[in-house]
Each structure stands twice: as structure tokens, then as C-alpha cells.
Length: 579
Image (tube, rainbow, N blue to C red; front, side, top):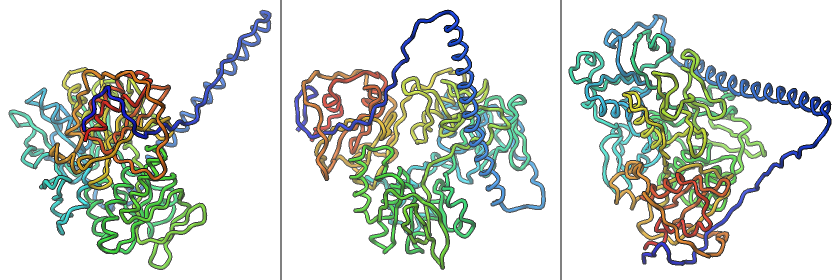
């Protein structure tokens, strides 16, 4: 039965507090002038030493990041086939474009549409390393794996959780784009995509870029939306080519096609990583463990699945859910080395355990692609990675950055870098607006979602870090509290399309004398609920567990940045007890 926002209720939620660290100030003391001078001198010397050390540390972090980028670039160069003939510039590519977008992902596509919306005659060129037109990435680790189409790797057709079929993953069909060679002469402008090309050098002063085939293009305005590349484990990087041949770093359509084919041919696949991607792939492949006899192993250093995001009790529950999907989950597992023995891979863990498998999928995070920083003279953030930009997503006067590669300042949560679909869409759109003179700051609190199949999923916003104190409020789920049901209601599996950017105009929270939430009982089934993440008693992150279409409320709570005496009452705003 529906419950009013001011009604009292009793549901066992959770309060989980992390250890707090406080520092005390140093009391001042009176003294003679000579002592004062001495103290001031020593303080200045100490401050100088501190600043020097801080700068050195930052410099070392920055140097380390650039060194890693250089190694990745060299590895790519070594892996590429060597051609004795020097590449020649492509005569079909225009020598000048008003709007140049580097990168062919969601952020670049969103920027292109935004530019054209504000300037219908704009000529936009997207330069993409990917051979495919811009496409949706989320289905690669979700719905595509649940397709019954035997030719799914070729057709890329899949059914959303609501059963509705999507015929293609491309954000727009080929007819949306104009041929590259026709772009300069198009009377009404258009968007052209140059696939399979990489920008290797950027002359910021001359407003030009050089491609890997030697082609040079000048521009008026430029967007860097280079995204990121999957990280690898050092232990695997040291292992040699025989191990590398049996490794998948999952990111693109070709990675899905290759892994799907491998899953039909081998007897065992091990996924390293317990985050969003690793857990989604584990559940997807676990389905095949039941139907085809495939052994699926997932190992990670945390105590449970998504242990860096979810509070411990919910992480443990999620781990059991993944195991029920047919996955052999090995938490607290740190990889020491990987080798080939006979016809199998042997993964040695630091605690002495050994895991034998046929193929490895490393899902251990993303490294932002910032190779252009050196030639362009752009700043890379030493802590978060990515190009540092201002509130309008500008890196320089005529250069903007959006998506995974942008390190921006969040006025509520501080400097951040976000790697999710919704952020790519909104930051790309805003960058496009600002490239046409809007001069708007980035205020958006982006959301992200993850599904462990059609029956369990969650949406999140803000800082969701399991090291923060959390308060969880849970209720019994109904048949409609699933990703499948949410897709049936919205008509789309890309939930950021249904979870609008809007925020609730007003949030009214009733005063209550409800008791402090209690820790949920061991083994309790967390049907649906709201988890609040706190910093200095203020909500800075929210996870909606099997609760959908409530993101505007969560966005408003975080934007307000207020302390709440009773988060039980705040949870009622999400209609948590609605039948």
C-alpha cells in the first residue's frame, strides 16, 4: 500500500560508520621577540621544505603517469603491423574544419548534436580511432550477453530487459552523417566521421592537428573526447606474449565479439576485477556456465563484489548473488604472477593459492587517454588523471574536453573525473554548447547504473565510496522493482535516457523522532532500498538499490548539501514502501 511521506514506519535499515580521523590545532605561546623571530624562521624553513616535498611528490606522480602513457603508446606501436612505406595524407580529408572533435565515443557524438542544434549550418568532423560509427557501450556488458541470436556478434541485435529488440547499437544510422570529402561543400553543414584514424600531434598555437597518416587539419574550435583505455595488471604485463594472447581487455565491440567467440570454445574463463564491469561480465558469463558447462571464475582483492562502492553487508549479499549465477567467486585474491603450464594459464595469488584457467579477462579500471597532453602543452591532473579543465570544460581558450578524459571541478564534491555514460552525454552536450558561445558551467550531477542481470540492479549518483559512512534504508521488493520492470516502464535500457537531468523542485522532509536505524540482520534479502553516503554529516552520494526513476530527487538532495537529522524520513521521498 502507498505510504505518505510523513507517515511513520518500521523497517530494519542500516547505519554503518567508518572510523573518523580528527586533527587538533597547535596552541599558541607567548615569547620574546628573539624567540618569535626564531620560531618564524624555523616555520618559514619548514614551510619551504613542505612545499618542496609536495611539489616533488606531484611531479613524481605526474612523471609516473606520463611514463605509463608512453609505455602504452610504445606497446601499441610495437603491436601494430610494420609497414615499410611511410603513410601518406588522405586527400579526401578537408584541410580545415570549423569544429574538430577528437574521439568517436558518446561524448563526441553528444557534442556534435549539441553544436548542430545551436548552429544548424555548422560543419563538424569527428576523428575516431574506432572503425565503427559512434555507438552505445553499456549493452556490451549487459543485454548482448543474454541474446538468443546465434549471430549476435555480427548483427549486434539484442533484446532489452523489457523484450523490445534493438536492431543496432549505433547512436545514429549511417544516413545521419555526411561523407568526409563532402563536408566543406555542404550548404547546410553536417557531421562527418573519419574512422580508423588517430590524432598524434596537436599544435595549440597553430590550431592544427596531425593524424597518424600524416594528414594535417586546422580547426577553429576543438573538443578532446579521447576517452580511456582498459588498464592491465602489472603481473600480466610481465608475463609475456603467450599470456597476452589469452587476455581480453574489455572495452569495444571487437572485444565483445572476441570474448563471445572464446566463451564458446574454451572450458574456463577467469575474470580479474570485482567492480561494475567485472561483476556484470561474471553474471553474464555465469549464465553460460549453467547452459554450456563453462567454468567462470571471478577474483579480486576486495572482500566482496563492488567492495569499493557498496557497504560491506550489501557487497557480501551481491557476492552471493553472483555465486548463484554460477560463478566461482574468489575474494581477497591478489594476483602475484601469471604463466603458461601445458595448455593452461596458471594464476598464482599472493596467499599461495593457484587458479588454472584457459582465458583471462582483466576488468581493473580505465586509464584516461591523455597522450596529446605533451604536444598540446595541456595539464594532466596528477591525482585523478585526465585533462584538467575549468567549470566550462575548457582546457584552453579554443579547446574543450568532455567524457572520461575530463578532470573537472564539481562545486559540491570537489575535483573529479567520471567514467560513466550519463556523464559522457551531458559533458559532451555542454562542451558543444560552449563551443558555440554558451559559456555555461558544468553543474550536472551525473548518474550511473549497473545490472546483475534482469532482476537486480542499482542506480547511483555523487560520491559512492564504501570508505565513507553510510546509512541504508531497505524495504521488501515487489515484482516491479527490477531492471526488467524499469525498462518496461521507460521503454529504454539506457537508463540515463529515462532518468532525466532534471532535479526535484522541492524536497520536503517531515520531522520525526524515529529511532536510529539498526544494522540489517545477517543474510537478509535486500529487496530494494536507499543507501546514503555521508561526508561531514552531509549526503554526498546515493545508491538506489532496485529503485528506479527517482534520480531527480537524489540529485536535489546532493545539490542542497544539507544535514539531515533523520535519513529514514529522507528515504520516504523515494516511495520506498510503495506496493
